[in-house]
Amino acid sequence: MSENRPWVEKYRPRRLDAVVNQKGIIKRLKQFIKDESMPHLIFAGPAGTGKTTSALAMVRELYGRKMAVNTTYLELNASDARGINVVRTYIKDFAKAKPPTDISFKILILDEADNMTAPAQQALRRTMEKYTRNCRMILICNYSNKIIPPIQSRCVVFRFSSLNSDDIKERVKYIASQEKINISSDGLNALVEVSKGDCRRAINYLQSCGTISKKLDQDTVFRVAGEVPPEKIREILQTALEGQLQFSLKLLSDITREYGLSGINIIKNIHREIYDLSISEELKIEISKLLAEFEYRLSQGGTEEIQLQALFANIVMLNHSE
Image 1 (tube, rainbow, N blue to C red):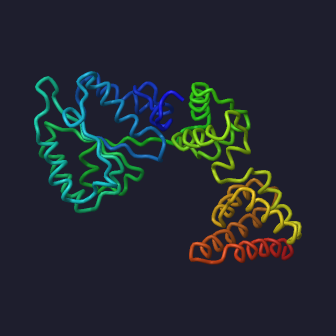
Image 2 (cartoon, helix red, strand yellow; image 1 turned 60 degrees about the vertical axis):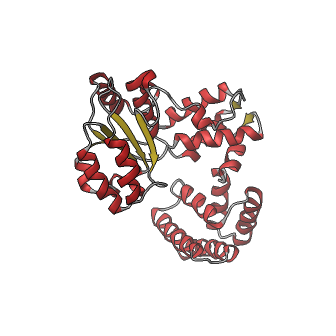
Image 3 (cartoon, rainbow, N blue to C red; image 1 turned 30 degrees about the horizontal axis):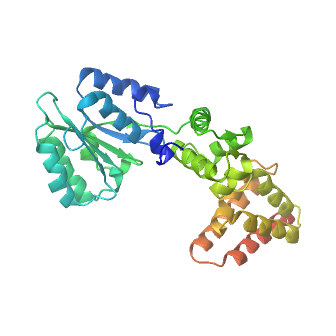
């Protein structure tokens, strides 16, 4: 590889046009750039959907070669700098300083703003209002409801949606070709499945798989992601539902040893597959209840082996009780 950087950063889109699956949002942001004016903004939505990338691309297109950290823009992560003192000192000092004479305003990007404490958010709202002529803010968060209403009322909220499978596939295929990785069709589908709409997660898994082999298939992806191929989970469930407790526990032991999964991982994998099984709706409901109960038991410190065996024993009993 030519650069010793995480692929998420190496292949981060540098222009708004390259951000995928957010056409309506990108169109409005480009209008702000064209007008060279913008309000305070909130970018909200699931992880890995292009919020931070869009903010940085917007700054890059707005300022061009004049883009400079601490002069035209500043990026802070609110999960690290989340206290009221940071707002009263660092953020306030940046906001009140006048921008360069040929630039009408600076931009402060506040990532993971939903992790800020309530007092810090209260202090931030006054800073936003007082120094809005010098500085516009872009607050990035996963959950906009964790931003206090006074701040929301001062901002235009853009809600980013999860990426669809085709968008993630195109990006993964592009990066794989650049890094000379041969990825099979089932491996590509597996990457999309384990990423769950998060393009950043898909790229990270691709890089992890790429360190193992330059030829990727479904099995490699599931091993790196800590998940089990769907057909193996369905086989275990089907065996339990047929009343074969001993055999289902043997299969469970095999995949636990082979893939190195924890009890919580096993339950999440089972939950992913139960709704695609050819069983009655009532049985799906009862299995869902069991998964919730045993997931809670494990989270409270229950012994994994005992709890998982008890889970499958209960699934066997469900079919016998029908």
